[in-house]
Image (spheres, rainbow, N blue to C red):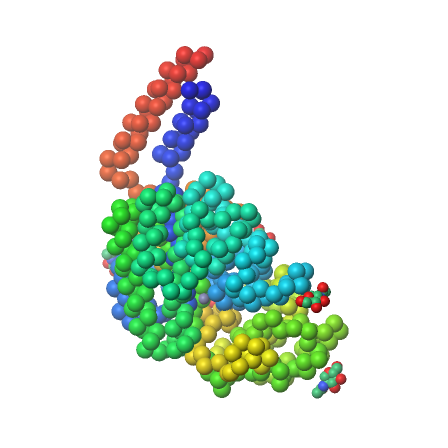
Length: 429
Ligand SMILES: *[C@@H]1O[C@H](CO)[C@@H](O)[C@H](O)[C@H]1NC(C)=O
Ligand SMILES: *[C@@H]1O[C@H](CO)[C@@H](O)[C@H](O)[C@H]1NC(C)=O
Ligand SMILES: *[C@@H]1O[C@H](CO)[C@@H](O)[C@H](O)[C@H]1NC(C)=O
Ligand SMILES: *[C@@H]1O[C@H](CO)[C@@H](O)[C@H](O)[C@H]1NC(C)=O
Ligand SMILES: *[C@@H]1O[C@H](CO)[C@@H](O)[C@H](O)[C@H]1NC(C)=O
Ligand SMILES: [Zn+2]
């Protein structure tokens, strides 16, 4: 054995003995899980999770409060303007092309480095049981394990697969995604009996996950984060505005995205005319791109159109042409999200449990950009540049608690290695 290899082995052993964190983490998202759904109905598994871990009153998410933008913010620690997934539907003037949630071309996603790429680049095995972006080769890297998205995979089966990745495949970092309670929130509304049943069902899934962690002997090894992308608020057909009737469409080139926020590209020179038309419309606030308030961190990206119109909570902006192209009828949805991220109804849950999280602990809300540096820290890896802050998360993490007996075994092993090294080194000198 050459001395340099031996030194490397020794260094590796010292690091593994000295690392403060277990280096294994599972990041779970339940889409559209508004922070206060947990107060609507008994959720014994969430309660138990909180008693053995951390539960924040809510989490601050990013504007726009849509699914793809916020999931990619969680995965990259970047504001939407910095990672470039600025909407579920976008137009990129440089590509002269549009993006939908099925777009898997890397060029749309390369503005950010998601957790599974950061971890894999630093030698960790990664798995993604769904996450926006996880089906894309980003910056030349794919997770070791990933699946093409399907709404229908049974929820418990997803848990079983992820458990197997940690237990037998050597995966150190994984994601697990559920499209509920978002779907039910859209269809039935956030105040419906249906949402209560769905929240109870998701509580059962959390209970199943925690039980499987125990059954597989992972509960003292794998840190768990359970969070979401956004909340949900009630909408109705009587609170919708048709952009066609608000605007002179000959002033408009395209409207790549509608809903709580409309993106409008005016004809060159007609920007002020469009702004003037929008200024007369009740229930919306329109901004020229340069004037979008800084707190939104939603300005510095070519995929944000020159004018955006933000609807008041519960109001929706439609473009009849756009609707017609899709389903030719007015929306029958009872709930949606995408509004101002300062609204309480837009805020999601954040809970965490595991060897590196304090127990029965709560603290001030964090921002969703903080999750990326938090996960990197607990994986003992270097984060890429990001907009998160460890200051907000340091209060609820802790070093790996000593497992009785294990630390003594490790230090005996370490001193024996040092002795062996001294002997080998003496021979070689
Ligand atoms: C953008 O693409 C469309 C067709 O998709 C084409 O008609 C148009 O000329 C292109 N614009 C530019 C600036 O290349
Ligand atoms: C719409 O704009 C075009 C071009 O600026 C103008 O000719 C037309 O009269 C406008 N239509 C209405 C209804 O104002
Ligand atoms: C979270 O958002 C609330 C209001 O929306 C704000 O008062 C608070 O300062 C924010 N906290 C952080 C850490 O961003
Ligand atoms: C958890 O914390 C609450 C409030 O700080 C306290 O009342 C309760 O006794 C604690 N429960 C456990 C199991 O430590
Ligand atoms: C967010 O982080 C990116 C990458 O480091 C940086 O380019 C950008 O300026 C940051 N944004 C803010 C508002 O600090
Ligand atoms: Zn969502």
